[in-house]
Length: 175
Image (cartoon, rainbow, N blue to C red; front, side):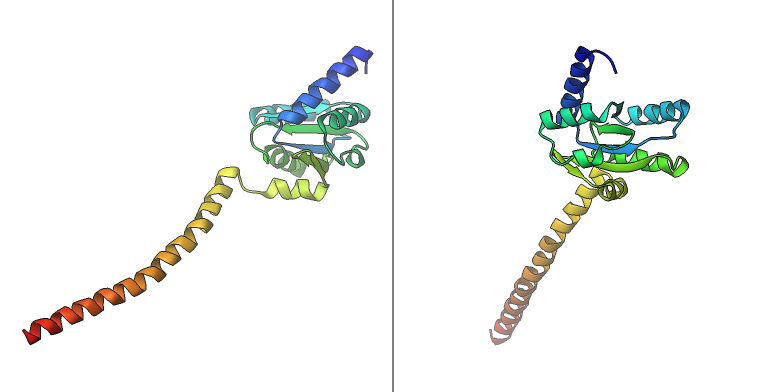
């Protein structure tokens, strides 16, 4: 790779990205051409996903320094790191989309909140809807019980109101 200083600089940069990234997806890119890889990098950059290739030993050192747990088992072969800097699912989604036309790209794992996860979790992350959609669903779920409670509470109040109205009418007839 280069001098010791270059390796230390790479480790420091990756450690910094690990600490700032919303998520990281690891993929094996063996067999991709330079042109394919460059195209992938350009697509990812538009979505605030940084793509980085480095020796696995340097990746392990950076992960250890950043306090990431369990990543070692996923760092085998030719690994590319996709750091999602804004939207946690962006890297996984774009890599999965790319893999549809380039099956040589294979998920190897990932990192979320300083914990490594499996290739299956990376696939699942790629299928998650965007954050805004998830928040909208949660809001809907939270709102439903409140609306139901309002309907339940409204029933006795309405019955009481009808009873008062009936009582008022009966009092009018007596007067």
